[in-house]
Length: 540
Image (tube, rainbow, N blue to C red; front, side, top):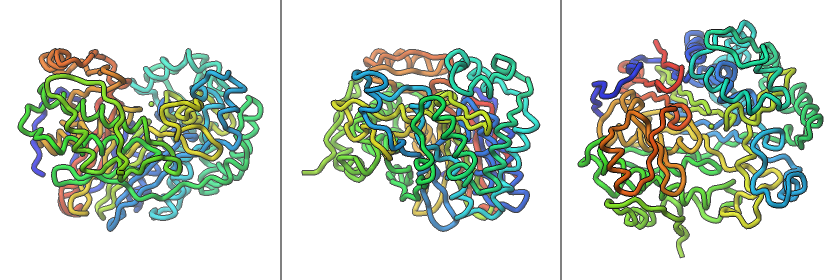
């Protein structure tokens, strides 16, 4: 691929070229990963160190109680890791109907009854054991240091911290952990999280076992019992992350890989499979036609994803059926270039997150994502070890008559997940490790940025900087304020109900990209980091 390295969009970032790179949404985490490479570690070591640091420096998006997914190229082969946790054994529809009323259709959005078994720490341990070079304890050192000594609060993180405070300040452990002065920290104010440093030390010393079997597990269960939760020691001790085979979709001579369900990565693959039936490159990159096609393809993808995707053991169709080329061609034929539509699910049966990426000069590339889901997740923070817990349980249904019965809550079942890492190959060889975080924006960001690179030759930083849209439901679309006004009007004229939004962090995600330029020992990589967050790409 020959990129255009011009800068067509206003941005605070330029592409970074290096042989060893870490790209994250916070500079201290990127540097934590780089420290591991300088110490003799590989890209996996760097990714784990960066991920641990991110739990401290961007707590609005993730914590020690997050879930995680990873796709990595080990130098020879692609591997996928699903470290999303299941429901506690006590969770059934009756459990929630008894506590919250017969009419509730989901578990609560916040509190202990939104918390499934956290998987991120298990992901770090599994990745380190299988692919890492450095001792696991070394990988926790930067995060422990940052938590102990503190760091100065950056701009974007502070804005989200302050916005979340009124909603979460009364939840167990939140104020004690995240409101040290009775309020959210201000920009440039020093924040220390000594409880999390204690938690990280226990994780470091036991290679993560303390979280699932030892002192942290016991503290989590005590805290759950005190505040009406259902988590047990057995729920934690029996959890294991799962190595999985990524699913894939060919597009313009390349192949995009995603983690299979229970995640929503298949939405990006469906949308690209639909777009493969159109000549996007003949249309203006930021023009009405190109954007309309992409929006409609994404709407078709989500119609099927929200109907069918769940824990794969419970799905009524397979990913292969959802990605069948003949089926996707039939879905593409539903698109009308002259009007927007509100699509429904087809029949494919025949007869809220941090993202980071790292790559090293030996060719290892890591695409990693971890998340507490919505801002600060459940809002629950175990105070002695600083464990901020996700709220992935909200992704379940408790409605026996719901749209997707396969996603009905059940003991030991994994909920529908939004977080998705992505990886691009060509002819079986690695090309790009990338991701775009942010709820249901993630597959939309995967598709939009990849189309810009593969159909229009925009370099990764330009594709990252470009204005984005976000499909919500029905005909509702949000667009960034810097989208071309003529295109905005044209999309509205086609029937899209498009609203221009100024808050890019909230609605349009943020990405990190590493593209392999050739032999990593010679040409190295080019990396991009999204200006919508506080981060950067760093390398040597």
